[in-house]
Image (cartoon, rainbow, N blue to C red):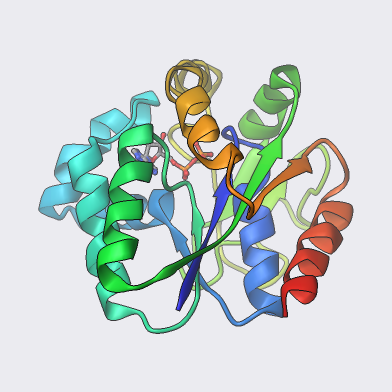
Length: 217
Ligand code: ADP
C-alpha cells in the first residue's frame, strides 16, 4: 500500500485532478475537505466543531484531521491519493510517523503551483455537484454546465461552497501562506517530490500526472 499526496493552494486544481486520476489508476481518493463537509452536513461531533471554521476559511485543528485520516487509512488496503492533506508541517510529520509505524510507503508528492492572482476567480466561480457520489466540479467561466445549476453528468444540483466566497477565499489564502512553506520544504528534498505547473489547462496537467504514474509502474 502506498499513499500519494497532492499539494497546492485552494483552487489550484487538486480536486479536479484527483477525480480524474482515480478514474485512470486504481487509487482511493481521500479529500479531507470532502470528508469534513460530509461531517458538517451530517451534523456529527466533528462536523459541529468544523462547521464555522470551514465556512470562514480557517483550518480545522490538526488532531481532528489527523484522527480522521488515520482511522480511514487503517480501513484501506489499496493505494490512496490525498487531496487537501497534509496541510501543515505538523500533519506531514504525524503522517510520516503513522506511515512508518504501519509499514505504508509514501508515493508521489505532486505540488501543483499557480500564481496567487489566478486563484480567486477560479474559486468564486467554482460550482460543485451536490450529489455525493458524483461531486463533479464546474467553473462558471471556464467549464460551465450545459444547463444552469444542473450537473452534466448526473443531473444533480450544483452548489456554491460556503467557503468559495471572496471573503472566505482571502482567509483561506492567509491560512495557506502561513502553513505552506514549511510543509513544502518538508517534501521538497524527497526523491518522489514533483513540481507541477498548475496554470496550464487541466488536460495537460492530467496527462503529466498519468505519465508520472506510468513511469513508476
Ligand atoms: P481547498 O483546498 O479548495 O481550500 P478543501 O475542500 O480541501 O478546499 O478544504 C476546505 C476546508 O476544509 C479548509 O479550508 C479547512 O477548513 C478544512 N480542511 C480540509 N483539509 C484540511 C486539513 N488537512 N487540515 C485542516 N483543515 C482542513
